[in-house]
Image (cartoon, rainbow, N blue to C red; front, top):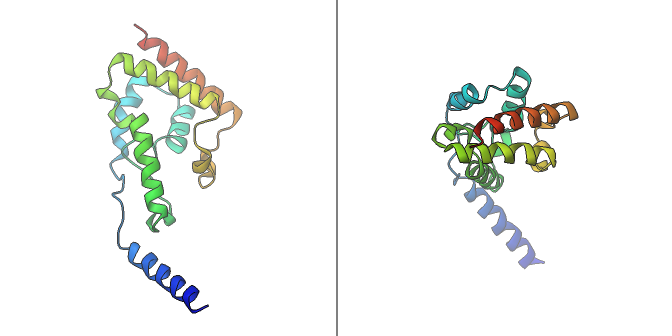
Length: 152
């Protein structure tokens, strides 16, 4: 029983020490998505949906919840954001080629249509990011129309 208490005590000490080490946060300006918005022209509803369900992981600006400062949750969140930005970063839209833009818009509507985006792990803590059937249809229709403009 003494060994068990020592192990628990050591784990607690390590957990406290770990709180002093934080990953870099994705705290750029949300204005970095403006070139994307100007180019793709989502209507107000789609723009709202993108802001609440997409931009946190797919732009250079993330709204962090209170628990994002707790290790190891902060590393898990940082990994999600970094992976999301690797897949699609709306803040970097202006640097994408026409072919890449066309491909990314196709991925947007496919992932939303299949219910893969936004991730369940995101919507568990961001209820406003749960898409209604109407929002799904609006995003799909918008993304398809934008994609068609980029086809070569």
